[in-house]
Image 1: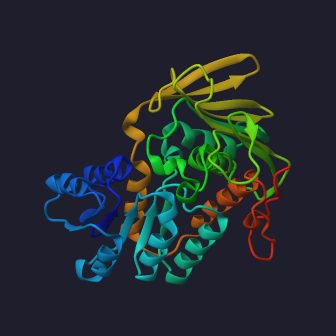
Image 2: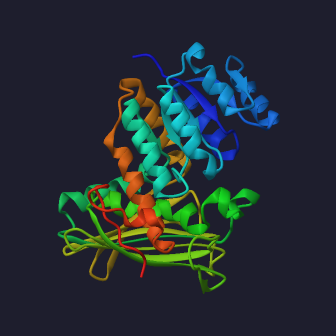
Length: 349
């Protein structure tokens, strides 16, 4: 089985980290590098001198056939994801995209539809799925060991906001803490339960303690998601919240026979532990550190080596986008009829 030849579009901190994860795991060939900042391209080329170099994504995509590319990795500002992903898919390339997949559900739907038409693999960087702790929570919730699971809480509070200017421009970022961190907590809550259908979303986004009317650069958001079968997911995210530490990352599963939690340790962004709950008893059963970083893109690259064909799991990102839309105030794409989409999401209330 030959390694997929990959092009990397966007070589900032996240893009460079994902590139090195693929190279370190020998999961793909680094065949092309692209970033408008020449210094970033040159830095990546130091370790990968054989890779072609580009300043513009369009030039990389135009050369994709001659370079023999199988896929591209997109780690650019949010507003660029849709155009870049669709252009790549239309050239027959698989795509791995940094989260969020798009600015809203309408854009996400166009990307997923393009992947389906092209019959090409589409992945999104939901990195926390690939921690050992979240994998075990997923297994526990689905195995029946916790009894009937009826509630999930998922939170991500960050004492820092992004330091990139574009993250605070709604036209480029698509929102604030909610679209930045909310896609993670929504994804984890649905994934751990096996993606039941979403029945309703009730939520609100805030800026400086005041509710936002529509989309903006929010710094706090909270929601209740009602799911098919009666389970409920509670979500909360923030930038600059008074959380008492650098960050709080936690997903908790409640069942009729027990509970389990994946949580960060001492405010760390990288160190986690998993706990089991029985009544008033808590047992910490496992800890893990940075070695989970990059597992998501490595898994995508290895799947691409087996098959470039479309995987319907890409549609999970569309559901996440609808939830985000609903919390922002019921944007048109959040109330898509069941005839047009597999999941109905009610406007926020």
